[in-house]
Image 1 (spheres, rainbow, N blue to C red):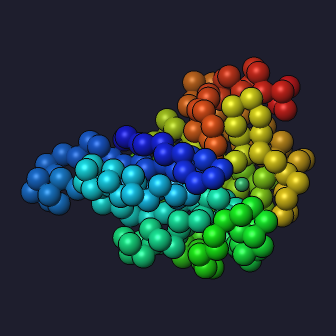
Image 2 (image 1 turned 60 degrees about the vertical axis):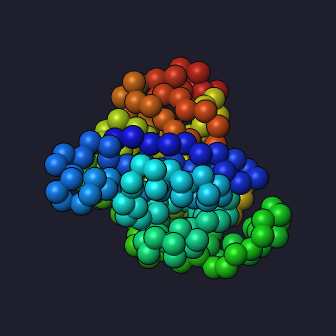
Image 3 (image 1 turned 90 degrees about the horizontal axis):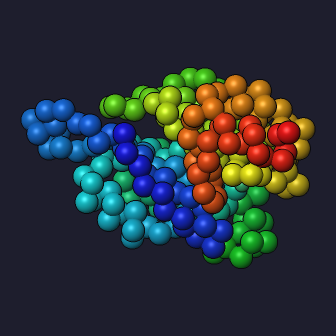
Length: 217
Ligand SMILES: [Zn+2]
């Protein structure tokens, strides 16, 4: 598995393009195309499309860690461009109902309503060639915030867990008790060595956050 991190949009959302770079006998089966997906497309579409083309990625779906506007602003664009589904937790429909207000408030150009095509289920693995995605529901930043554990090796934590901090909980159904409980009970039970890739900023590890994150001590 390989991935690219592309900070995108005015809030520098980490958009991730994740794909299987270990394609055996691909030549005969699908002209070397590598199955993959995109997490939280927030902009930089030209750069992303170039990566998809250059790496010969067969984009399967869009995953949203949650549906605040900075994380979903390019969902419809990629959905139409590649004919793929938007996948997120049903609980985020509450956030999507407020998209236009969020756009206005945060200065985004509103590009239309976003609809979830497929709902995630807590603990129900999604599989593509060479990649297993385990959705871990971690509500608190928003009601349907999800972290994705990919191939047991990489945790994409959205706006739940950041390096040295946690997601804000003062907007649209956020809850500080819930986010702390989610992180402690669902993420801090994972291996110390596990790499964490947040929705904004630098990567970290579970072990580092266990030791140094002031919200978790
Ligand atoms: Zn957010």
